[in-house]
Image 1: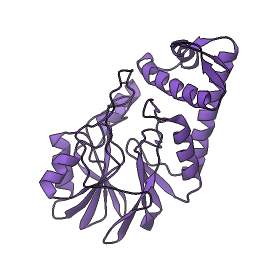
Image 2: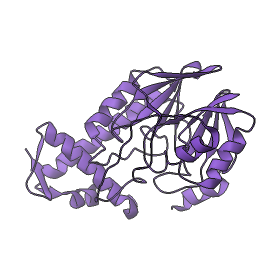
Image 3: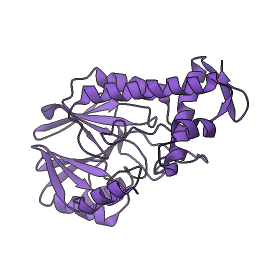
Image 4: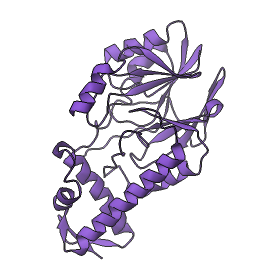
Length: 293
């Protein structure tokens, strides 16, 4: 991890609930990394009857922190945004400890031998119910609605908290970093479409699973869309100079980025290329080289 992230980790409030808003608390898992920032933020929504969003990794200490934070309350539902290993494996142990149903995204398991840019997929995830787009879960004083946002993964959901105009964005939108879109399951066209969907909403704050709240959602989503379009233009400019491999594109476009993140960068470049190929803008010359169509 970088020196800056090390300092944030040293000061992070692991093992206890922090108040985020009148209806929302957050418990931070101790799983920091260049991809998870200071760790997985598990959100507790409501008082008395509580919804838990993204219980995080299979970490007994984090499970105990969630149970301690909700002592004297009832966990009414466990909601999952997507099935990466830093988000969903805690659902099973939390369900066993509380009897609460696991609700949210559809199960997903992929075999992918390429460089991973995330924590991998959770094969143990077994929801009691998959939530349809717009389906609502309610408790005393709170209402959460599922918002389908494929792209980072094909099964990704956000959850909208109507009473506070908030959106729990999982990994679809993060305030500290751009989101990794890693094929074969990650899809750049779907990701861009899901960003456009959020831009059309009227949420006043985003709560990502990693990093701080996003307090100007529309401005940040516009920035993310512009960043992806700029990256697409840069890739096309590279190909205009001659056939290129993904590693050569990464070396040029991510020269200032920590080399430990180049594997992730390569997956995002591939996602852009597959999107451009589907739109007829580029072609694959062979297993490694790409050119303008």
